[in-house]
Image 1 (spheres, rainbow, N blue to C red):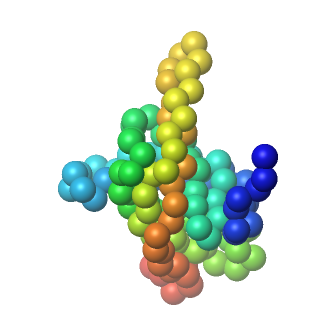
Image 2: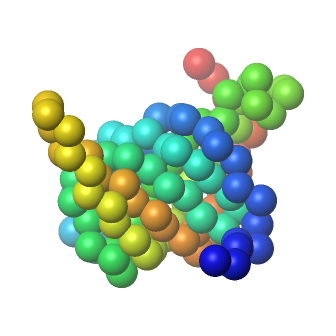
Length: 112
């Protein structure tokens, strides 16, 4: 199978908060990234999503990765694939989403 990715993918396990803008939900769904690139993200969460669903998500790139201050990423994307995984204790949902737009906010000068 040929590699179709055009952006370099980074294996990063970071907390991610996901919101569904179409539902106007006030609560975020917590998850964990598995990998990320400038064009897409794959994360694990408990909420089942359907391909085509719009998602807003935020995550923080720690200073160890950025070699400086923390960097906050706010992004909007669309789910392209969902993988359901079950073990003895629980089901988790793997979500692949294409990133349609994102904002990067540097942590420098941000009050704690």
